[in-house]
Amino acid sequence: MSVQGDAGSAGAATAARPPIDRAGLAVIARRPVLVSPVDAFFRLHPGDRPLVQAGEAVGRGQPILEHHRDPRTIVVAGPVGEDGTAVPGDRWQGSPGEASKADGEGEVKPGGELLFRSGNRWRVAGGDRPDTLEVPFGGVVHDVQPGTGVTIRTTSSAVLGRSALAGPTWGRLHVATGPDGELRAQHVDVGAAGAIIVAGARMDAEALTRARAVGIRGVIVSALGIKEQRDFLASERRGRAAVHGLPPFGILVLDGAARRPIASSVMAVFEAAEGSMVAIVGDPPALVIDDPSVSLPKPAPGLVRVRSGPLAGAEGTFAGLAGPRRFPAGVTLEAAFVRFGGRPPVAIPIGDLERFT
Image 1 (tube, rainbow, N blue to C red):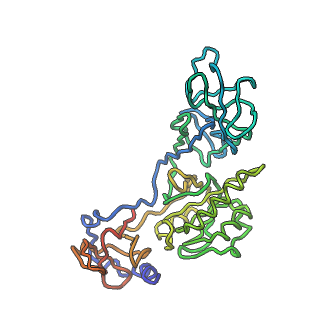
Image 2: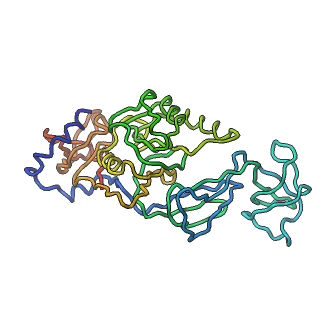
C-alpha cells in the first residue's frame, strides 16, 4: 500500500514536527508489541493426564501431558477404588470384568479418567493410543487443574496474534519474505525445514501444505482466509488420526482474515529475533521468543496504524485530535489526524486506529 510505504521516508522531517500530543494519543486503542511474562495454557481434554506438578521447572521438549488421538468413554459398573470413595478427575485402571462396551465400540480395556457417576456406574474417558504433548519453551508450571489444563509461565517476551491454529511448536525463526509479501508454494524452501517462518501478508492453502510437507515447524502470517483455515484444520485432523501422527506444526495469524501487511513494529521484532529459538502457542495465541540474549526493539513514539476502513494496514504518526468529522455514508465520528509520510495530516475515525506500545 503506497500510503504505508511513504511512512518510512518521513524520518528526516521528524525533528521539525511539533511534540506528540500524549493526552490525545491516550484515546487511541493500545496494541502492545511485546508482552512478558506469558502464561501459556495447555488444555486437558477428558481422558488426558497431566505429567507435571505446580511449581515444577520444565525445559523445552519436556512432556507435560498425555492425551489420546482416539479418545472414547466406557461405563464401569460398581464401586471404584479400594474404598469406593473416588471422585471425578481421579485416574483409574480396573480389571476387564469391570468394563461395559465403549460408546460405539466393542469390548475395550478399561482405564482412564473418571468423569461422573450415575447410580452405580461410572463414566470413564480413555483411549488406546496415548501421545505426549511437549512444552515448546522453558518455564515453570504455574498451575495444574485436572480435567481443565496446565499453565506454564515464562519470563520470555512474546508477540500476540489474533489466533493460532494447531501447535504448539518450536523452531528457529526465519524471515522468508517482507511485511507485504505473499509466500507461494514454489517459494517454500526445503532449507527452512525445522524453522518457524515469517510468511508476510498472506499464504494460500497450497503453500501451507508444502510447508508442512518439507518439515517447516510453523508459519507466522498477517492474514489467513477462512477457507484456508478450514482446509488446514481438516488436513491436520486427518494427519493426527493416522497411525504415526504428525510432527508439531502451528500457524500464528497476526491480524485476521483480511489481507494487510505485517505491522512495521512487529516486523522489526521478527527481524531482530531471526535465527533465535521461538515457539508458537495457542492460548494466548502468541510467538514466544525463548532467547533472553536477543535485544528487541520498541515501537517509535506516536506510531499508529489504521486497523479498519479504506486505509487498513497503513501506518503513520499521530498528529492530534480532529474532533467530530463527517465521513462517507453520512456518518459523523470522532477523528484524529494522522500524518502518512510527508503528506498533510488525514482525519481518520478514532475507532479505526490502534497505537503501538
